Image (tube, rainbow, N blue to C red):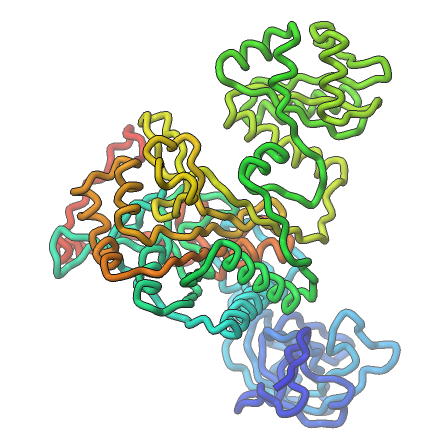
Amino acid sequence: MAQQNTQHTPQHSNLYATALRTHTCGQLRNADIGAHVKLSGWVATRRDHGGIIFIDLRDRYGITQVVFDPVKSKSCFENASKLRREDTIVVSGAVSFRGEKLVNKRLETGDIEVFIDSLTVLTKADVPPIDVDDAAVANDDLRLEYRYLDLRRPIMQKKLRLRHEVIAAAREYAYSQDFVEIETPLMIKSTPEGARDYVVPSRVNPGAFYALPQSPQIYKQILMISGCDRYFQVAKCLRDEDLRADRQPEHTQFDLEMSFVSQDDVHKFVSSMYAHIFKKVLNYDVALPLPKFTYAESMDKYSIDKPDIRFELFTKDVTSIVIKSDFGVFKTVAANGGIIKCVNPQKDLARNEIDSYIDFCQKQGSKGMAWMRVSAAGLESNIAKYFSPAVQQELIAAVGAKPGSILMFIADKPKPCNDVISQLRLKLGEDLGLIDKKKFSLCWIVDFPMFEWNEEEKKYDFMHNPFSAPNEADLADLENRQATAKAQQYDLVLNGNEMGSGSIRISNPETQKRVFKLIGIDEEAQERKFGFLLKAYKYGAPVHGGMGLGVDRLCALMLGTGDIREVIAFPKNKNAQCPMDNSPSAIDEKQLRELHIKIELPKKDEKKI
């Protein structure tokens, strides 16, 4: 049955009619004038104007003004005078036109009001500790403690509704492409996936523990071995990590896997699904096919593997040029294995602005930021004298700089250099108004390194997960190509945010064993940790691949916020605590004995592990 997307109001039969209401508080219009209706909701405001009481009655769908006139019903009027904010009530009465001069254009129901002839108070409310409207927003701690009140705010109802619509649109598209929704377990075997596991003790198996899934990774691969062909689920994923605005201990991902596919097949499905979601939820057209960048291209142009491509301000590795200069800082960094990168905003900046960017870079972890101003005669600054005219011209040509602009340089080891200059690029894009905030720009990043060097342990680790298949060109000599091997790994990026990662999986057990061995998992550990997967591969596995796509982050970006807590009904705070129910909390001694657990708390002077 068709519904109006903004009002969620049926065109024909009334889905919302129940014993306690005939309509919602956002449903009545001019066409209902003269009808006798029953409404239920919360008292948002109460106003006494000259012996007549006006109440804004609120539910999820909107607000309707209801009127208590002693001439109409003296008892209703007297009872209404005792109502307070957030009392829940049931009222009935006749729908009336407000009058041309009294129409409230801010409300969808602003043309009408309901004159009440019956009032029932369902529950009384204490004075709310936070405002239950969008006029004043409480601090985060109070919002999380009284989340049930915070969620009554219209803006929060809107956010929850959008989240529902995003998931519904994703499911709709997956169903249309013959995917089957299958649930995987929440209590699983602990396997290394890059973060710490949350663990669950087993009462009936003393000393043994389940892990809560960081993702459904291994189980969805086994579903492909099982012949399910196309699977998805809206999955809860849990990781014991330090928190920030875009990270929670539990998050939701749209998880999928496909059999007998290439990378391009997965990309085509996911790209089309995102286009469907944006069109369905925001009526926004995503242009297909989505652009693709190799990992190397992304790091070269944007200095990050999740680029914001809404604006064309690029970074440039100029190491090979600046080492021809006499500037000792650059030459020393390069001699020690570092790199020098440059960004040119094609705009002149005052000295105090340059100083503010130097301060910004230092706060990002850089020792500083070198700079030179571009003039018709060459480069100008206190370091320009170390650069010969030939080197200056080579620099200017390499970055495409124009007179009246600034060259900004970061010099460091590759990782910190890229980290800082990518943040500088974003800062410039924001400050200079280069970013179209109404635009959603999606892209694919492909050809990730298979391995990355672990400086602390002096060995190679997997870059994403140990199940990503290496590129065919690297497979035969993989043991000698750890520094250069590429994986059939890919990320989807939206406005500079990673939406999800995926890969074509290793489907050959011998190849899987080789990869495990290369990252330091010996045969005994392979059998202990992954024996069930390796066993399953022995019975014939299809080539398969898939992704896990972040639902929380997508919803947050669609709403224009970077804080995923805004789109999660009951999030945790920065200490992974829920102020509303005070979890995590201690359990009693009886439960501990049943679980064969003894608690040894760290001493106060010990650092938390």
